[in-house]
Image (cartoon, rainbow over all chains, first blue to last red; front, side, top):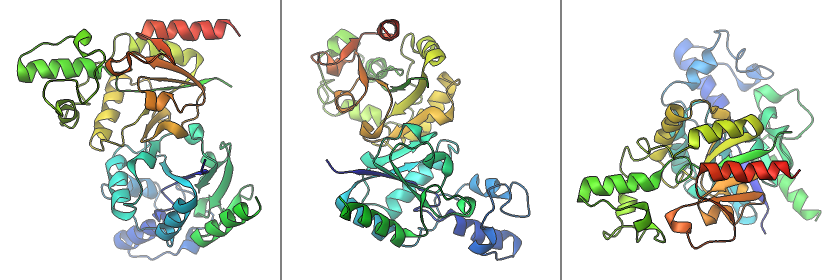
Length: 179
Length: 179
């Protein structure tokens, strides 16, 4: 049986951080960089309190997210070897559900509806690997974890870190070559 | 740690069968009964080919589903002992996503968004129990299964059958008393 991977959306295949930077520049005229955001969290991301949450709750936010660099090619590559599931903790923002599904259909049309999961808590997800940026998802996962780099996880070091999709492919290719 | 249960929506907490009967009477004037449907499947349910699918694809179908008899009380009861997740294979019908979420908020407002999962294939769901009416979900499940009675599963006998929510509670209470 093929091994399975649960891949997160926001911050992993969808570049939420870039969208935050773009929208901040659009609304406030200041262009921050990803380096400026490193080490912050959703509450402290911008000088304006609660702004990240306001962005996330805006209609169109999820539908217009840029695709993470290299994600399409990497996910296609992984699908040759693994059963790939897209697993998004989408239930916290119910309005995001149709946008997230449409975004996947537009940007990852090769992923079947059978392999898409929108959930709240990810602790009931049972795959061999999980690629995610959030510790709350990775820490409770029973399989092997890959932590995708994000501003809010820069100080964590108890999961294998991937800074980009090339590094994810490298990590998984080493996993396979040692078996 | 509390044991966990994945509970299906359609045919388990939402009475899809009753909605089919009601809508058929509304549109064709004939009142079938649940006994009339026993042993049929979604393709053979009504004399008119494809009608069940047409109903399911109609806006409002999922939002207006009647609650299955006894489901609210039983789910509340189970939540005293178990971590209860509502797991629906909703991805096949993307338009159903917002309706299903709204239906849950209206009829099961005591269930947190953290415990709701909309997926395609349920094989990556990892709970101790699964209550479902579809063999395709139950057959691949690694934990203990309870098959909720439905017209399409009357001839299956390789899962513990519950004909209604009282029987589900009985089965689970016997499970616990033997430990």
